[in-house]
Image (cartoon, rainbow, N blue to C red; front, side, top):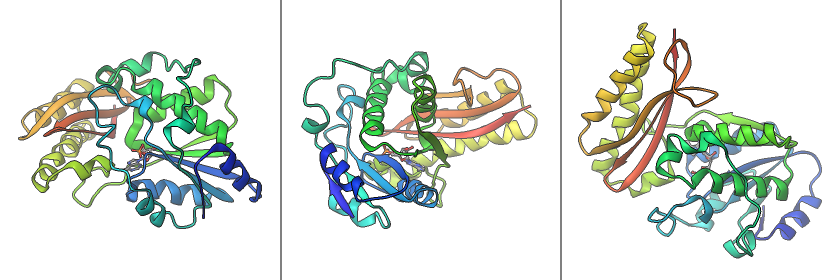
Length: 275
Ligand code: AMP
């Protein structure tokens, strides 16, 4: 495996490889969720590049940019079968404050974007850059970050970017807790409390499955989360899977939520069919 820390080093490494390149972008602190993306990329690519970069542009003031777990050596040890790891520094990625920015459009200001107003502009900026640096035939993203995935799909479609975007289902702990690098912030007690997110989503899913309306589904899920001890709901909404606009009638929906467990902000989502 080659570890490249600049675009030039990465491109040197890619010259030695023949065939198509699959890309998985991460911020490190790798867990089995990330590795399921790598596995999926390996199945459909001749070679795989994994980027590991904690992108400052996608963190707002007062967020956990400084505290975010970083351990490149431990991450690299987990990346079996990966050809190249791209792990740049901030001065390599942003030698100057970028003058040209990606405008993520209206979907970036709802849900996650309401609480984190500059987040998705920062995400799309780095995703666009890494796509250009690596030139993959396809890139794999987790359904865990459903709104991010939808925005990346929109960027690729609207800007005619020459690659496919593939989605990978959420990998969960046996308890149901969605795997996340931020789970490392949680105490054992908080991990228990954090189960409330998935529980609330499954309550909603059950109501929808039993024939409940959009309003009933949403109300049941919110009721469940609102009463969970140690958990402060940021949002819990029922949205259309593609547009991320509120789903108020029959259709393919996504229950999406964010909540603080102690000082840690977690997100989760679950598909529901209202019908
Ligand atoms: P991150 O390192 O948090 O930026 O995540 C990098 C990629 O891994 C994103 O595409 C995430 O959606 C994906 N990912 C993170 N957690 C999970 C999970 N539990 N299951 C599946 N994919 C995940």
